[in-house]
Image (cartoon, rainbow, N blue to C red):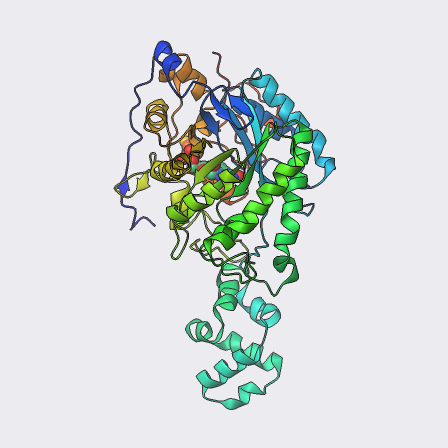
Length: 492
Ligand SMILES: Cc1cc2nc3c(=O)[nH]c(=O)nc-3n(C[C@H](O)[C@H](O)[C@H](O)COP(=O)(O)O)c2cc1C
Ligand code: SF4
């Protein structure tokens, strides 16, 4: 990646506002969010911290994590991507059953208390398809690869020996194992080759599989039930995860060529996401916020563009969605090849860089990199006479850039993920005229590398426990015993 991203940008110096200037700012002024009003236009987007239990329950570390963000009193805090199904998915938070309610309620209570009731708390609802780890070559060819007649034909043609069309399956397998990689890649069909080199990954277009074909029948209810649980747990609303590498984004994707009315045309691709919104809105009360996060640009070859995203956003806004949060990229399609035994990670390729841009970038740099997408989507919504708020994220690193984006009409809420991870108090420091105390994010993605390996996410600016530090409670120390799980305290 470094060849195509040759410039290392400095994090810009920040002219922090005085308290009086902050009081006059748009950033620290209220904004209507559907049936609620956010006291500020500051927004913490979803970040998975890998702190849930193996069964997907809220742990004490999850509560500490969100309480810490809430003490910075952002206008809106969105909990991490949370699975809507009642299936095992490792230490990813889940909301697919009522047994998760108690824990989620405790998070909501902790956020209300730490923000003194000043932060709206939403939860991001996610569905995702199966992805397998990259297999060992021999194991895959000996056990998992399907030996089809097409494969036998290709093998026979390449080896110039028609007997391979009739050879036993185990003979074919052993012959494949003995092949050179370059020859093997000509024998396997593209999906089988991908399963070998990157691990098998289901797609929404695998309609020969019943559980994929029936997604449009199953998902509206699953999302609606999860949203109802979120309301029962006391959240102010939900953010439907229609972005990045997951099921709903795959329905919206230009690569979705399903021929059952849920793909192909723009209307077909938008159909299931719209049906989910309608199902959710029917299930929850009118005072509950229902928004979504979608991609302003998929940033992959043949992927959806901002034009597509503006179409989707407008349709969803017409359906009554209360906000549209704009992200970019983060796809499996161009993810780096994982090591054997590891799964592909959708933030490792060029589209991943667009999602979480670092200081190593192209001439445009990482800061406010996606604002133009948010602006185009917002303009489309406004020109249709709708006031649906648009949330922008991506390299929003301080007060000035956020305020400028709001004043210029790029967005209605300015979302900061990594800057808030680096310093959850940065909103309060800026608001109180104490911006010089902000711990600035370095935008080098140490946190994202931890996320990639499903390790408890921390920030390199605050995580080391040094000799002489005050003892931390055990729930605030990472499993490796060396890192703080929570940003250091700040006294306003
Ligand atoms: C550790 C980590 C975990 C993330 N998890 C999620 C997630 O669960 N859902 C999501 O939509 N985005 C997720 N993101 C992306 C962020 O919400 C955000 O869009 C991205 O980091 C760009 O914003 P920033 O430049 O302010 O960091 C994650 C980002 C990081 C750094
Ligand atoms: S680890 Fe690095 S990129 Fe991540 S929040 Fe901290 S300073 Fe920013």
